[in-house]
Image (cartoon, rainbow, N blue to C red; front, side, top):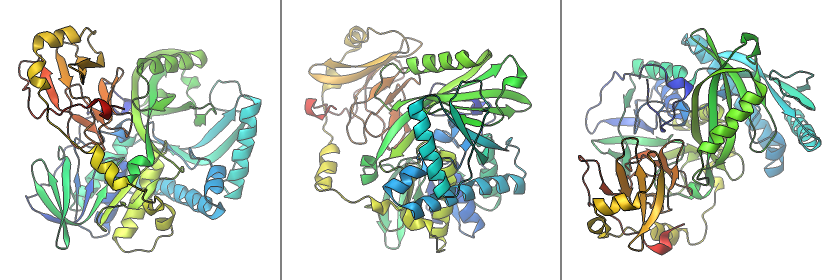
Length: 526
């Protein structure tokens, strides 16, 4: 069983963990360092290594630990941001290029599966988008008009692959589905076989310039490189992109059905906001139905468990469920204009690049990003570089002062005041629960695990000092501002934070307390 960034297990985790093979020496120099071992990072590394570059992937946890391990793996050209919106926000030529890039991504995944003989249950299929009332019908007609303007073939269909009543539906062929971690693992293996290096449990904590090189520091080592790619879903540190990407959580369930004939043959999407999405996946000869939805902004809903309950009710309304096999949630980042940011990281040295803001199309855009970054780093001309360039994000007045204000860290004596006895009084909560409480006029994040152990943390996210919220479903502290997530003991699960929440005190006997405790100002809370 592999690990991922939450307490809930996804369908994809039921497989052996990837074992890296190639080793790296301290102070090794590379052409490119890729930070993050999800589909974006591994595909980028694979393409660059194939092009003759010497690359290393630095992963804070393990391959597929983040969103790639929690995706529902729809491979599509029917994107979350409809082409009609892209035409409206940009122009028709932009929308045409986005459609072209998406089609190339689907073709690349298909051809790579065949070339490497990857056993990932890849299957080409159709996608169906269906309306259920007059308002949705008008939106569906507008979406069709947008698809026609970019020459994405669509046609109205009298049938959809799920047993749900609808007023109208369209079918788009040439979409696909697969087992995402089996695919990523195979690419990782091919990358290592061609001389690439993957270092797991290597969180990048600093990048600096030294003459013509970038020096990348992890907890255990230093590496030198010509260029650096942040394929971490959102870049670490404090950057303009954090103000242009909103973190969202989406919920998913994998179930088995009593009737084998009820598994849908295609991908399906309703048109509610947030919408539900449906597909089947065969793994080792066994069928599963995967349904997702119930999205909300990260850290903006205290009752995360209710989203699973509503999703389960929705599934049981339409399907004869035999068993709920897995349920999980996953994180994605939505850009302000609907297109991802791929290219040079604003405000960073010239050879630092980023890929973020994929919305709900991480598999497609992650593959697109890998090709764009690969072309940039091998000095190939690409018509997509300007299209997705993060430089379309313009600096805002006072941003330097804003960063300085939010990065302030002050020490406190709260750790000396909060005894274990007082902690027990404050933690009048059930196992598995967490909450932010006030003690001595300061905020403290308190949670209790299944064994009754209590952790008290400074609740200010180490990224930009927003106050974290407890995620009951995934047993994590989530930042509502920029999506950083932490374990109950304060360990970073997902960026953009690179530092753990400060532990104030814990009832676990092996814990160490009272070190580097940060002061919590009332006016810092958000």
